[in-house]
Length: 486
Ligand code: C2E
Ligand code: MG
Ligand code: MG
Figure (cartoon, rainbow, N blue to C red):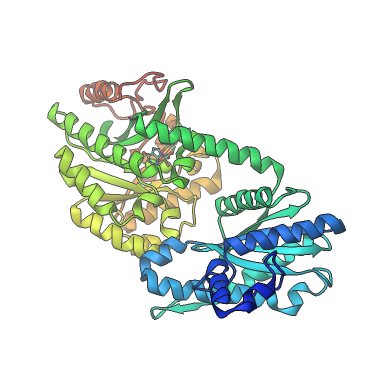
């Protein structure tokens, strides 16, 4: 499948002089799996397109198209089948771009295009002589549609989707490197916005991308320097005012900026996969701390730890959990993992297998932030949850907002029927606590009881509450301390 319609700087005559030369050129310039041009040839073609566009004063576009969730497909089906998949998608992309109607009307009559496979699951496309930027949008749309029907691999049907980043010449860069870099930034944004979409580059992204890169570098350093620590928030049973669990929450002690909450770094940690070592540290720290409390004579309660998709999708996730338990010596029944629905969406079947294995260890599973995601009832049916945590956004409006109250009550009812423990998150006022209790939700977390605090501070409040044994007594911890022990 030689699909390069453009003349490159290498004269065709060279290739035809001998079979060997043709073979060498083919090996050097074309991807052996798909037959498409490779990165080398693409760069030559792009340079040529830009030279012509500069001379004629016309516009061009560079697109980077990435097959979404390819890693998961590769992990599920193996190398051989994922090669079959890549070939099928490449053929569709190529056929779509060759189809006359992609060009007709959109790209001017003398316009041309070229597609290359530039890495495992990434394709680069250059469109020349664009009549207007909107044409690139149309081509991106057609490309996404053209790949979207099922590909059959290993007896399964997989529906490919593409994320596409687009940079325009001359507006987004006047040389090949800059255009590819900016298309890549736009591609990153398309992925961050939820994949299966195209995104045009804009200058603000550059600043965003530079900031993100700097944050990732700093995070990498923070992992090496062990700048993370855990704070703990109590879960209280309002029937007796006693602590019935804790949640471990990560904090970053930044040498210059002080203590940073997860909102400032978790997303970057997830995207860079640095959440894997951070998450492992949190698991080990939480288990060790919980056991320490037990050894101090406090009643055993579960400690919950938040886990991200990037951790759960790894083949070694279950063994990481088992190792944290083993190293700390804490019994599995006192560990609870909190997951969000977004973690289940991408690979529900894989997550189901993983969580069944986690349950076999004896660990409890909680669904966190319930009500904010898809709130899919089938997840509640299919996953072995022990606990459902009602998201703070539902608690905020209690008891005044009628519809919020109705939904909160419905979620509590649902949890009871499914025999799940139900916990309200983000309880801040006595009125909220009273409403929840009156409607059958007795387990609560929130600033009304305590902010997340250092282990020794939590221990003090725990002991105080055991002495008081009074329901509804708010724990007076107005501030999360600015400086905490790791
Ligand atoms: P989450 O797991 O839903 O944790 C609850 C968040 O709500 C915590 O924020 C907690 O401090 C905050 N919160 C608790 N009670 C109240 C309240 O009454 N009012 C208000 N306004 N907020 C309350 P935090 O610690 O900033 O964590 C935010 C999110 O970051 C967590 O939400 C969780 O999704 C994520 N996160 C925290 N630690 C980890 C971790 O170790 N690993 C992973 N993967 N994610 C983490
Ligand atoms: Mg949580
Ligand atoms: Mg939550």
